[in-house]
Image 1 (cartoon, rainbow, N blue to C red):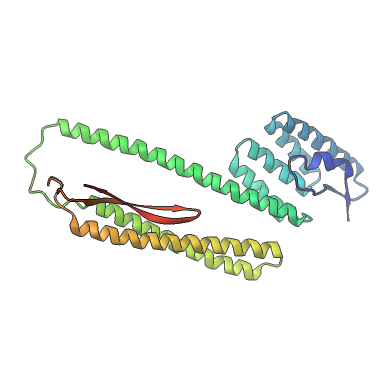
Image 2: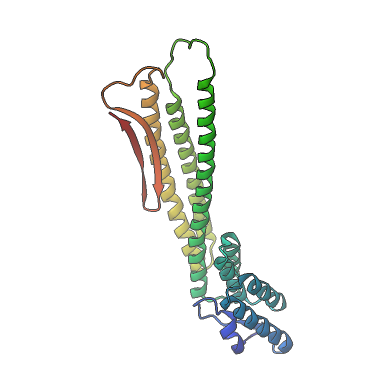
Length: 269
């Protein structure tokens, strides 16, 4: 049987707007409840002072004494303030599956998980972009060094299909990604069928619809990219041949956003 720790209402969930109380186990655990109350108040004070790492340690100590679900939410919120996105996601997920959590609080935590996962994905995309820029600079440097060295007379020029290969490779990756998201969407149907709560069913339904939409977009972009790659392959000209005066396609670039996707076509005149 659980009882409400009214003294912890101001310190237990001070980091959120979710109106969920903290609980301690058993009326005989007065000492434990007092310790949790003291640690939670100290943690809240550190949080308000911007000392999030110290607040996390105090909340963890309180949770070891009494596993109150709201403490997990507070730890997640502190990690979010520190911009430790993945740690925040971990504790929000623990909070969502904890017992005796109100539905409104679960929905708030699920919203934070969705938002932070987008932030993590964006950060990883930026990192990959920076690594690609460095690789491109190294490649350009190597090409410049090669041009300075004496070379033998070039062989008979052959069609340069590098761009076609790149486009086809990217299209294959998009189609593979569509397959992965299609499998994930199908898996959510099983999760929906097995779910025993409305929140779980809603979460499975939303994820399934999202995965299906992403799969459709990736399939469409992959198909367009494949068509573009075939066109580039068929129309490739020798690398040393001067470009014709008329307009010509120089490349394709698929793109995806939360609201849709498409295929950008680059050309020159």
